[in-house]
Each structure stands twice: as structure tokens, then as C-alpha cells.
Image (cartoon, rainbow, N blue to C red; front, side, top):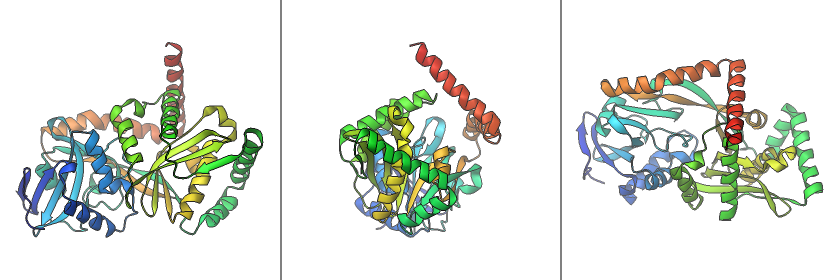
Length: 374
């Protein structure tokens, strides 16, 4: 492919680094990205594919990719977003569920050299992929990302649920049967293409965020636009998948996520609260697991963050990391002042279930008060 050219090319001890906007990557470079990713031992998470970074680049002007060259050939791709004073974040920070560098297992450059080439004083991550040896040493906390293994087929997964959580499985399937008797035929579509169904999901999710006292992600234009763009993305490594559960003709639960050949990254699930007594979200996830297995997908990644439905559905966990890589200077100090106190406070609460429950109740109470004041 030859030596790197163009603006942003800087020399370093480990070779050369060319910094570009995602849309300026050549077709040949995108092919190398996919080849490098395919050679890793990590799960085929669609957030690590170039399609996700390209989509973020279309909605975030701060998106960049550093292409690391060794021996005149691309050896790694480092997607990130650059903020004020050189403070960087993972690409799609706040919604991306897998982050890191895509490259050869052994790179000549270290994290400090890479940050310097990118003009970054720090690079923050909250879902760093396991095995990212360049950045894991900078992690401040490790979290579990909950997964459903359907590699042996849905019947094998169902057998696990029947043995481990027999009451949960019986109750959920009974509710699905009752839903059908009382509301009409229960129908499931794994890959729904109706834009109205996606709009309905986003409405439910926004209401859920407000109801639970959390920041409404879809109130941010870049996130809602990103999701709509990814809904039309069709690539082997990264495709948008909208799954919908219908009762009669009415959609009652839906999920939008990204899939590769072998991984379905679960992203935005929600349901119509009018049907809450039927546990439509749980029914939806069981149907998704069945359909995913039929599609040859071996794993559903439910993401980090504790939730009762994840505990009920999971078969295992994989680690993800939160923290920041920094290099000496004023920028690193500013990052620490701005982020570490709140991170430590969150960690303190997370390690104390009673306090965490109190905080959650406080969020819901505040949301109700905001709603009453409108």
C-alpha cells in the first residue's frame, strides 16, 4: 500500500501515524481494517467494525481515525473523538459498547506515543474491549458485560434456562401464551424494516429514560440520527437489526442493535408500558435469542450495567473496562479533575447495593417531580 501521505502524517519511534476523518479512509484501508479485525481472538463485535466509525463520523465532526503504519503498511486503526484541550474519547462515547484499537497483536508504538501523534492529552473509554493490551493497564474499573451463548443452538440455551431458572422460564412463557389469548396472535419479526417501528421504539425508550430519571439519549440529535443511519447499514461485520414483538397488529416491544456474523450487540430495548404485565421485554429477548441462533449468531451481548432481566437471561459474562490513557501535562491534570472524583463516587455507590438502590429510587422520584411540574 506504500507510505502514508496526506495531512496529519507524523513520524514516531514505532513508525508513522496518519490522522484523518473517518470518511477520508480509502477503500483499501477499510479492507485492511476488516482483515486486522478478523485476525483477532476477540468476539466479532460490530462496534469495532469500520461501519460504526464511519457512521459516527457522519454525525460527529470531532471523529478521527489514526492509521498506524509499520514497514510502510497499515498496522493499526485507532478511532476516537477529539475534544477541547486535546481531551479525547472513544468513538461514539456514551453509546458505543466496545472500544479500542484495531491492529496487530504487537505494535511498536506505545499508548503515549499514539496519543501524542493524535494530539491528545488523554483518551477516555467506558467499554474498552478485553485483550486491549495497549490500554487495559490504564483502566480504573472493570465491569461485566452480560452475554447469552446460543452457539450450540436455541434448544441448548432453553435447556440451560429450564435447569437454572425454571420458575423464570415457566412464568415468561406462560405470560406469552396469556398475551396471545387476550390480545391476539403474538408475532415476532427479527429484522423489521418499517421505519415507523423504529420511531415507535425511540419514543418508548425516551419515555423510559425520563420515567427512570435518566438522561434521554434520543433527545441528542446526533444519537437519534446515528441510530437511523445504522438502521440502513448492511455489511457483513456491522448491520442494523430492528426486532419487533407484535400482539395482533400492534407493536408492543422492540429492540434495535447491531450484528456481525456471529455477535448480536444488544443496544436499545424497550416496550409499551401498557403491556407491562405480560413482560413483553423478556418475551422479546427469548424470541431474539431463538432467531439469532437460527441466523448462525453465537452470542448476544447484553452490555454492561446490572439489570434483573440480564441476570435472568445471561449464560455468562465478559469483562469490559473504564478509564483513561493519559500522557504527562496539563491536559492529563484537567482530565483527572473533571472525571476521577465522579468516577470514584459512582464506584463507591456501585459497591454498596443498599446505597445503589437508594440512588435509583431517588432518580425515579426526581423524574416524577419533573413530570408533575410540567
